[in-house]
Length: 217
Ligand SMILES: C[S@@+](CC[C@H](N)C(=O)[O-])C[C@H]1O[C@@H](n2cnc3c(N)ncnc32)[C@H](O)[C@@H]1O
Image 1 (cartoon, protein in one colour):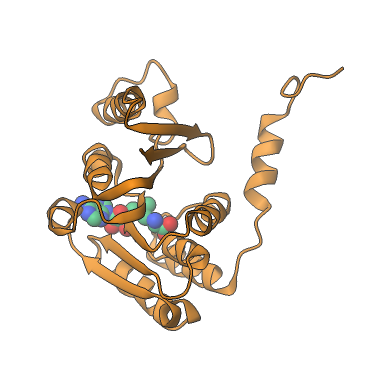
Image 2 (image 1 turned 90 degrees about the vertical axis):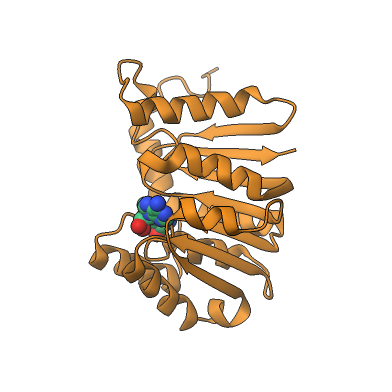
């Protein structure tokens, strides 16, 4: 009997899963905006994961740090029930403005309470209410990911879920020879959180450059 995993063409599996999702018009609009502004965005696979997580969690209050042009924002909103709330933060005014326009012109903006905050996460997050979010996504520059992750964890309710995008810092965490400061910070963040077994359940997915799921017990 063939063992699962043996002889698997990982590149083919990767490509298939990345191309599998069918994206909505709103997601495609956000992707076009991201491209025109030169903003990185979550892949189609990660976008579909965010939609499923938001829906499964029945998230009432969602926090996103790193709006970009709104691809992940739209993906999260698509999984959220009408009437629920989203707060999204980005330091770049032109990106967040573009995301806001896309959302407000779609049914998502009409069905949800969407608060966009332009500012540095390090200054904005301490002003938000601790223990009040059901779901948080961290998708910011690598150099501030570690600190932002801990700030976001404090803002989650018990029973909340944190999603860290690019948790493997473009894959460098998986390379034991990579010892630069940013890689070390990502490695430390992943390991330190995983060790808090009384406080969290974690799962590290190899979607894109690593998606770290942290369930706050
Ligand atoms: C990879 S992009 C986010 C992409 C977005 N999640 C999407 O899927 O479309 C990272 C974003 O983090 C923002 N960012 C970087 N440093 C930040 C900071 N200190 N505070 C808030 N946002 C920051 C950048 O402006 C950028 O738009």
